Each structure stands twice: as C-alpha cells, then as structure tokens.
Image (cartoon, rainbow, N blue to C red; front, side, top):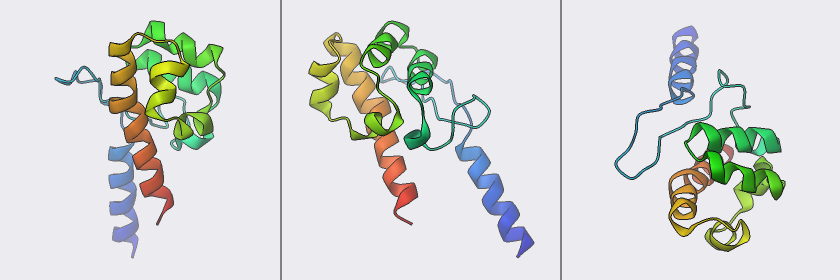
Length: 116
C-alpha cells in the first residue's frame, strides 16, 4: 500500500511542476505548482495568483487586465471565450492565446480533478 501512495505522490508532483518550455502555439506550458507560491487548485487562487500566473506565462501587459477586473481563481474558471475576447479589452491575438492555451486547460483540469 505504501508503494501505491509513493507512486501517486510522485505522479502528482510531476504534474505540479513548472514547465517553461516555449510551445509552437505561443503558450509557455505553465502549470501551477506548490513551488511557485500558488495553491495547486485554481479555484483557490487570489487575484494576485491569477495575475502572477499570466505574468509568468509571458503575458505581462495582459495580466494587468485581470487585476483591474478583479479576476480571482473562481472567476477565472467561470470565464467564457467571449469574456476573455471582449470583457478584458485585450488585443485579439493575446486574448485568443490566453483563453485557448491557459484558461480553457485550467478549466478542463479543474473539472477533471474535481469530478473524481
């Protein structure tokens, strides 16, 4: 039983690592982790955690929009594509990347982790 717990802990830790490798699609593949100061579940993120996530992902300028609109983790997980494209007053290119490569995967992962 201990080996199963060790294996589960190891796989969890590897999922919670920060991967800063540039992707072809313009995303950085940033994954939330305990090491970077954010709670592992985006639903628990404060506004500053959301802002720091997008700054770390290479969206320094766009991160300010999340601060101005007071988007915390729960709000982030509720955002639609339209919210990101129109509600944050971002340029279209970065807005599309933010939604498709960051918000949508965070939403999917959150749902997957909380439906077990």
